[in-house]
Image (tube, rainbow, N blue to C red; front, side):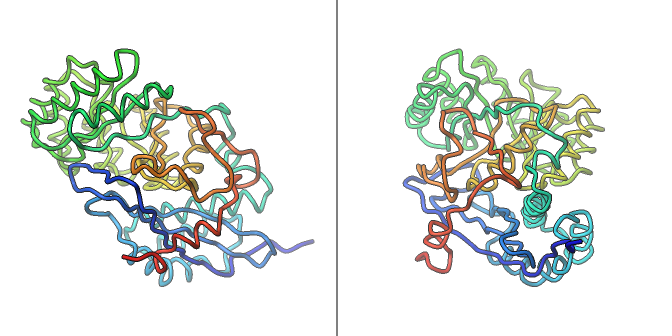
Length: 378
């Protein structure tokens, strides 16, 4: 009997992707995206698990590149080395016992363990998640960053013409300026395209109520995180004082946070991210909130293809998700290329779900090497 494969090494490969244009949210702007590509190597030739740890958001990242790489080298590697490739539960238990917090790093590790475990068994990650409910993964258009109203309207209109059925736009400046942005985008995309608005923690509750009431006339699907993440009671106040569905993102870092939202009735929807919660955490939150009658939206703005395909695997398996999904790319910065071999998005508004073992994708290592952080000029 062949002994089970075991993890023998863990490598963090930091990459920096430079965009053609800056992307701005209320917390800052950037034309560079940073991710760390995780490699879980084993004692079986050709068996390796991969995941993407995202340094996000622009302006003030939750976890910096140096922190991620340091955590992987100092804590993740010692915790995982020696664990069987298919024993994700033990690997995560060992990691939780040695590394406090660092949810974005842990999420990327969790996704890499899914990839590794599924490859060891010769099945797609979707099978580990319970099996696909669908083979079609619809997505929104590239997120529209904060800019002048006419510039935002032009980008949104381009996505609408390409065939996207939903568009997400950022706000977070002054009430008057943000209302003008929403009005311009709605006029540009017409009434048939759904419009989602994200303020990234910008407003106080009273101001959030004012801006949301002012944009109600523009048929907004939901408003995301209009006030600071820690103000759960403020979210309750905003929800009660407005007529648009309210979604929280930053307030939910853990399943415990999701439970707090449910108990307080603080939101109509919750944003779930494979990059922040990991596939295990995301499944837990989605199922928990389904029982509470709260719908979830899946995805993250900036993702290299590796994180995107991990979320697409989850999207194909989970109930209680509002479609189209917000699974991201580098397109908001004007970057169309990816770190994967092949094209996950042959048609605007959809991700093609691979059928191979693990995440089912092949990494473009020459492209990754060209964009390694230690080889890209600062």
